[in-house]
Length: 260
Length: 78
Image (tube, rainbow over all chains, first blue to last red; front, side, top):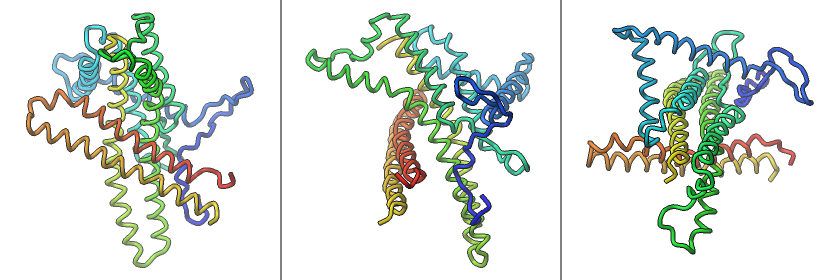
């Protein structure tokens, strides 16, 4: 990082072991910074939820916040999963929404100004978002095959498809069904990585411009203003990505519950 | 042309897709607003579909970005 006064924008995504672990089946198992920040996210969610669950008769600000989030997720499910069956998926969709939202927002917090703390965005790792997406996809498959048995395959044939078109449509629909977990995971992962790289690249401009001295200080000021705007945009994207992940998950579950 | 400059040019070409996705996202929100102003009472019910369309359009731009990054940061000796 120090050499040539350049910042490597990718180094913020590096996973480093904090506590040296042990070998298991030839894999190194250790407590990494990714795991640490996941625990931090978990702790934050815990504190947030407990603070608002006092069930006061006259809700305070905190309780209103928690009730707002719960109502928001409830509303996503009520509008996208038709029928009364949707209610039982609330825990998973709520978990997804809260975890992604808190992980995204924690990654955007300027914690790096405290010496010795290296903030890490948990959702900028494809393994993390991939596992979330795979769990969602498994729920769809298990619920679909459990509830509809082999009739679940009729999901891939829209109503009123002409007979000669059925094999072709079936293949296309199957393909679009199979890429769902990838698109879910990739969207969140790339959105997070893109924003963070963009901010780091412009931070790099600031340092280089200040190093150069003279009139290029203007470039540094412009870059800082730009970083402020991008950070605001990123906060919006954090919330939108969490919303979209929860929304698409409940839509896919709706497919499994109700077919078409 | 040596490999590293070809890499940078390739990454730049891949970034065109991000601009195309920007058109797509703008189109999604623009069309939504156009419809929503004609019938504001129906707009709230379509917010879910708005974000699904947004997500689909955005994903393709993000894939273009990912490709650009893969090209840019791939090990030069291939």
